[in-house]
Image 1 (cartoon, helix red, strand yellow):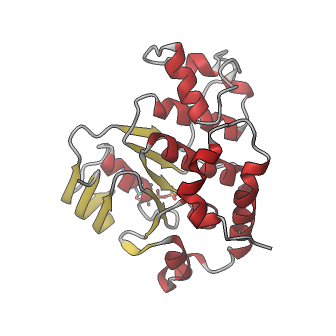
Image 2 (cartoon, rainbow, N blue to C red):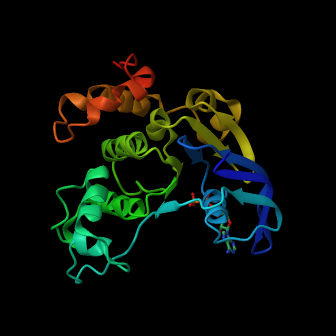
Length: 261
Ligand SMILES: Nc1ncnc2c1ncn2[C@@H]1O[C@H](COP(=O)(O)OP(=O)(O)OP(=O)(O)O)[C@@H](O)[C@H]1O
């Protein structure tokens, strides 16, 4: 059974039709990225899934008992408030030490538990937010532009972590991003949204679709090459996670042969 089954979704807000006739499905374990220009309704679609927005038309069906983990775009924490990453994970609900450590480990933040939240870099901070979203052992992880403010290598590194999370925990992942060229290698499927679904499919298919090019142009090949190049070599210099290689077979077919020069 699908995790999410949305049909004919229509959302109006502020007298405007924000989404119309959106049909969207997510299956267990897949990584889906929603791309689209500013104001195209990406966040609204996610908010319909988490139940924060009520559609005017269509249906949103979630698998009964579906557990969702949510990583927001940004979370503001008062920089004068002293709080470690470990304590942050225990808010508002206390978490056992081993569960907290497991979530941090899975997020590539295993060493950050004792660090002050205010001292973390953008990428480290988002990893702690990711750890918090994993505490509920979600079937579906939702990320709303979780790499905003990171540079491209930082974003690419973050998305690689998301792939590891999927491989280790088996959850499906739904993300919104402006950076198709950075996320596409980490995605099984890309949905291009502009009030409605313009085009969708495998990342390469969407990147070359006329609808996508009309919205985003074609000037992203360099960044895509950068991502692939780094991805192919990432395991060579990352010795901190002994389990990396166990999952190479899951994704090797996607990346192993794609050396960019
Ligand atoms: N509650 C609301 N009331 C009025 N307008 C709204 C409301 N929620 C969203 N909108 C408008 O709907 C449009 C789509 O918003 P949404 O946040 O879903 O877009 P987005 O694709 O996520 O944009 P961005 O890339 O800028 O984050 C925007 O023009 C926004 O101003």
